[in-house]
Image (cartoon, one colour):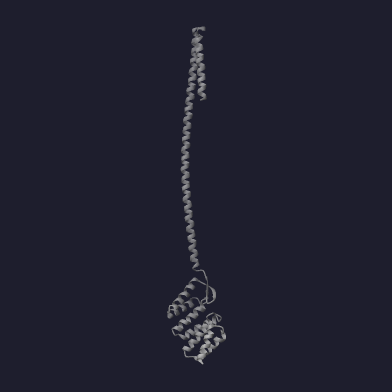
Length: 257
């Protein structure tokens, strides 16, 4: 705008000069007037060329500016696209990480569960607490379940196998007790007495020990050994006087006399 105004002023000044020249042409001779007119024409042409050059340069600047703005807009669009792609990749990465973490948690839980199957567990039976392997627990409980179903022969085999596999188990005394009962039920009285005596020798203060002594006396009575049964009952009363088995032994002694 400032260049256009300057041009107008220059052209106005030249026009005034041209008028003045025409007005005073009579004061000069023809040669001088012709020179003055030529000079003014050259000056006007120079101003016109300058104006055209200025307009061309302004047009070029405008075109260059528009081209720069277009390039900048294109760059902005490219950057927006890249940001969107990065955001999508980041969201996918977040989902993948969450999936990996879930899988790791599931794997760790699975490993813990599998390890737990082999770790010793605390067991309480007949008032005693001890550690036992999970397989050991399952084996004893399976044998006892067979016995409780009334399959005394099967229970006998299961307890024999248990004691063979776990001779030092905390379940040994209960296993001997139930093995003896299974043998008593199948009328294998001698083997039953052997296992009851093994229980007493192994753990004389065991909760089942008084019952084991009473069971020995029962086996002796089944074998018609009244004298042996009487002595066993008397030993029971002396060894475990406060037990329920001792009360039963006293009644038995009364009947035996």
